[in-house]
Image (cartoon, rainbow over all chains, first blue to last red):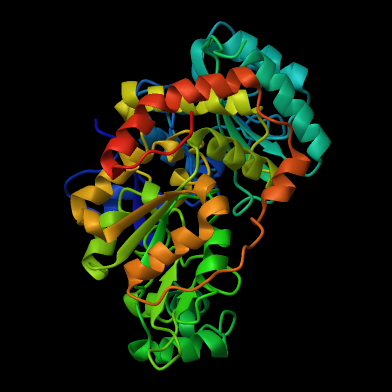
Amino acid sequence: MEFNKIIKWIEYGKKIPATKKFDYEEKFSKKDMLRRWDPFEDTLSAAIMSGLEIIPINNSTNILYIGKINKERQLNYLDLVENKQKNFIFDEECKNMSSEIENFQYIDNLEEIKGKLFSVIYMNGNIVSIKNIINILDEFLDEFGYLIIVLSRSSEKEFNDSFKKLSESLHVIQEINIENYFRNKSLIIFSNKKIISEFN
Amino acid sequence: MGLKGSGRNFLLKNKQINPYRFSWNSTFRYLTNPIRFLPHFLIIGTSKAGKYSVLSYLNQHNEISAGFKDHAGVHYFDSSFEINSISWYRSHFPTKISKFKIVGEAPGTYLTNPSAPTRIKKILPTVKLINFFRNPVNRAYSAYNHAVRYGWEHSSFENAIEAEIERINLLNDNSDMKINNENSVNYLQFSYLRHGLYAYNLKNWFNEFEKNQFKHYSTEELDENYNEIMNSLFTFFGIKNIELTKVKRKNVGNEKALHEPMKEKTREFLIDFYKPENKKLFRMIEKKFEWD
């Protein structure tokens, strides 16, 4: 595979991302191959539009998604993992949800997935506390996994505190300001891999 | 799609008649584009290397129109090539009946964009290409401080460099992580180190253009030798030489006032990082800058 399954297509005079449909079959027309990935609806798509260089999701990635995600966007993520992995959604505000999609399963409590490790934890909801996040990462993030997190910059102080605390436990891969699509938001990719600093 | 949606799409696709984006000035410029110049020169590199000062010097010559009132370049060949036409690009420049004989722009970002050389070659095959290279160590720090000022970056300089190195390594080792993303932002905002790999970036240009279409200078020599440098450019453009008035370097004061000097250990790391690449550059351009 030369590059990730994310490609770009022209629409409204501007290229926006699309994912290659995992459920594409030859009988459909060529345009059905691509699934629109609206940067105004999805923070990762917005990050791609804003200059994201790498995407740590491929067909061997399993995702724990914390936050709200609709069906169409779930399909975009399943396109990225080519529907080969079982993924989970934890949304504290919505209990007893069931997904229409087999490989995206809602959970009401993190206890339900105790003992599982994820190669990507995507935090796209209201952040309760950094301590809480760190606990989730300690328990569920693979040692070579990635955290994708969306932080609000409405309060610069809170953003700086959160960023600093996360940077102490994880290694920043890229920080992307996505405010062209999501007001006052930044998306940051952290790696759990330990990197020896050249500067210490 | 309903009537409202169709109307919206139509207006988005036809910006020139979109009432929300309509401007008499740009419409006039667009309509008169056939009698306007395409640029005779482009300052292709680099960002954070004093292009506004260069433009101030160039514009002291009454036959030159360099850059624009509130921006240095159009960024056509990196940011908007696929969405705007050549007529749109031409509409930015003065008319052929104006007092100007030589026109140009200075985006300073074309150098690093891999698609720019072929695009420019196709549209401006005989254009004169100018580089102002700044010591890449100082350029990297300046670019970082710029990103901090705009709220794009919250890591320390050292962490930001390490993050970029990690991204380079990840991309080299994991082709499946690479996004087929030609977004020009990549070549600007997130390339503190890579933007300074001048030889690597220049190679693409040397594959497309003749060496005699280029002039290369360093930002550091501009302060001292501005008269000599600018007049060599005037000769390059085929216009008369003039005596220039020294201008104060732009944006330098802000940077110095707001930011701590770079840590010595970091500077040493960067000097070593760039040493082989600088050597390659000096061989390519047959000129040496005092950067070490």
